[in-house]
Image (cartoon, rainbow, N blue to C red; front, side, top):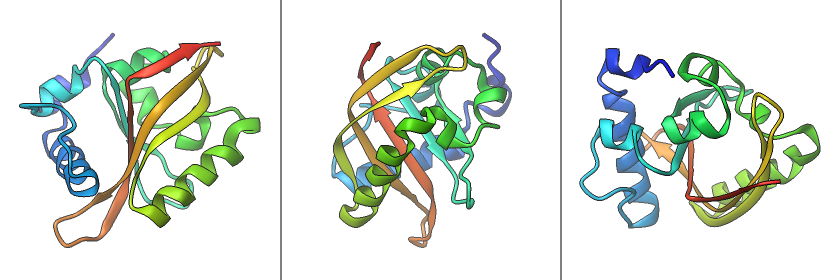
Length: 150
C-alpha cells in the first residue's frame, strides 16, 4: 500500500491534534510515547473527519486503511457516513449525538463496510471531538482495537 504520509511526515500536525484532543476529552493517553509515525503505524484503527455538512475523512492510519480496504487518497476523499452501510447510518448518527452531549464515548459498537463490501463490527470504540488550541471544533475522531468480520 502506498504511503503518502511519508511525504508529509505522517500528518504531523493532525496526529498532534488527534493525540492532544484524545487526552483532553478522555483524560487518557491514546498511545504511549506516540508521535505521528507511531500513530500512523499503530496496531489499532484511528480515523477522523472534518466539520463539513457531510463530513469527509481527514485521517485514517494504516490499520484503518487495511480494514476499509483502501489507501490514503481514497479514504481521505470519502464522506465518513460511507464507512457504514445505509441501514446502519441512523445508529452511527445517534452515536455522534451521544458523543456530542457527553464530550466523548468509549463503548460504541457498530457495523461498518469496507470498499470491497466486507462487513465488520467495531466494538468498544472511543469517539471524541477534535478541538483546536482555541477550543474550536475541528472535527471528530474514533479509535478501536476490537472488531470482527461478519
